[in-house]
Length: 90
Length: 198
Image (tube, rainbow over all chains, first blue to last red; front, side):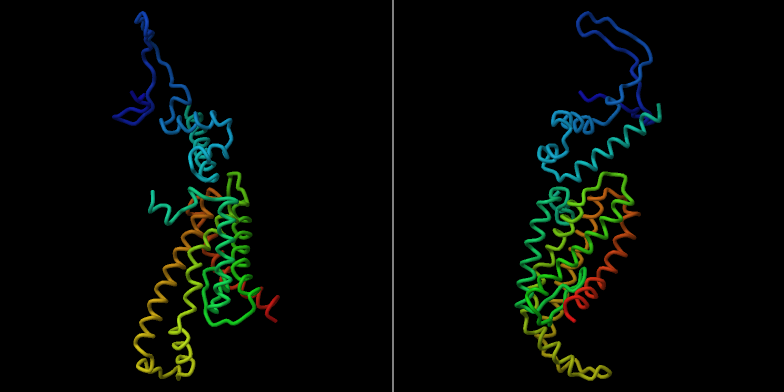
């Protein structure tokens, strides 16, 4: 199931209210902010996972994704800018 | 995705690979141009009727692409906050020449030759269109349309190649592209004429 990260009504970022143990069903309630990476869209998270798996090499990433080097670099620059924006919002 | 690749192949190809393919295309166009008397005497410029050495025919596309590569490298490095690779700029610009390669064949048409000869002999103030054979006229119109299409296609690739290589927004790419193409239409012609044809 896809983790919702923004409110379907007002598009604001969602927060974590409840966490539950999958074994004993113990629930923890509070106001937890989503971790930075979890606050990113799913395709962006996938890109970051691939980037780490390719040892942070844009050349390897471009081969793995069958995209040109500047296309991959531009995508990474876009993600960096998004991360900076999210960090500044906090 | 396929239609995107027609207008922007650089999401898939850039750098050294694009440079190698582009250079091969430029050499092919230069060779064909030598035999068809077609030359690329400026960025997005195609003219027929020049009889020159094979060196000059091969030189034109290189000077055009070299100019665009230097122009876009300078502005890419100044305007972009990304890590711009010069090999991507030169590679995409060389590759953007490819749509013009088929245009080097158009000079083989005898219609253009006859049309130009008739036009040169006509009184410019009183051109009688019925002196041009209709099949020549239609062929010249068809060649004109094909040339314009190929030129626009190459122009779109030049634009997209620079935009992607330098990771710049449209508002920054547009003025650099327009001025670059306008200067590139005349500067390579001026340089080659003064350095090699005098």
